[in-house]
Image (cartoon, rainbow, N blue to C red; front, side, top):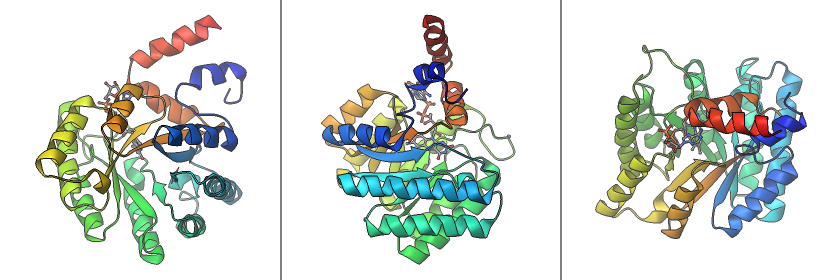
Length: 286
Ligand code: FDA
C-alpha cells in the first residue's frame, strides 16, 4: 500500500516525495521563497538494529544533500526510528553520529517527540547530545502534556532550543489535557515563556489565533524576529506561511519524504475531519 501509485496521489498533499532528491528539490524551491526546511525521512518504530542503522545513514545522506546544495535546512528525526525501543545506547550512538555530521555543516538535528511513553528517554538523549556537541540539537515539547512547563524550564536553563507544538498522539487524561481549549491555553502560556527565556524557540502551529497572539506578544515585548522562528507542516496553511514570510518572520517547513508515510499521514487526517473528505474525493476521482 505504501508504494502504490494510488497512494502517491492521495498522500501528495502532505508528503513532499518518495526520494531524497524530490525532498531536496522541494527544499530548494522553498529556499527561493525564503522558507527554511526540516527534512523528515519518514519512519518510526524500527524492529532491528540494522533498520535503525539504515535510518541513520539515510539521514546522513540528507545532510550531505543539504550541504552540497547550501540549503537553509535541518533534519527532523524520531528516536523510535533510531532504535530507542531496542537499545538506548545504540539509539544514542546513532543520534551522535548524525549530530556530529550536522555540526560539521553547521546545522542541527531536531528530535521529534513521540507518544508520552518516550518523553523521558527522548529528553535524556537530547540533553546528553546537547552537552556532548555544544548544541546542534533541538527538543520538541507538546503543549498537551501537563509536565511540559517543567520540561521547558529545564531545557531553557540548559539553553537547549525547543520546538513547541500542541501534540499529535492520543494520550490519557492522567498525563495530558483533553480539551482543545485547555491545550490552546497551555500552548500560549508556554509560548510566552519560551519567547521570553528560551533559546531560539520554534513556534510550530497553524492555529491562526495562536499565531496572532504570538505576533502581538513579540510586538509588545519588542522581541526581534531573528530570536525565534515559526514552523509549519508541508502542505498545510500556505496562506499563513506567505503572510509570515512577507511580514519578515522566519519560517521553517517540515518536509516529510519516503515510503513509510502511513502513520504520519494518519496523524494528519486525524487532526482535521475535512481531510477525510479531501481523501475520499481523490480516491473516487481515480
Ligand atoms: P490545530 O490542530 O488547532 O489546527 C489549527 C488549524 O490548522 C486548523 O483549523 C487547520 O486550518 C490547520 N490544520 C491543522 N492540522 C491540519 C491538518 N492535518 N490538515 C489540514 N489543516 C490542518 N506533534 C508531535 O506530537 N510531535 C512532534 O514532534 C511534532 N512536530 C511538529 C512539527 C511541526 C513543524 C508542526 C507544525 C507540527 C508538529 N507536530 C508534532 C504536530 C502538532 O502537535 C499538531 O498535531 C499539529 O500541528 C496540529 O496542531 P495546530 O497547532 O496546527 O493546531
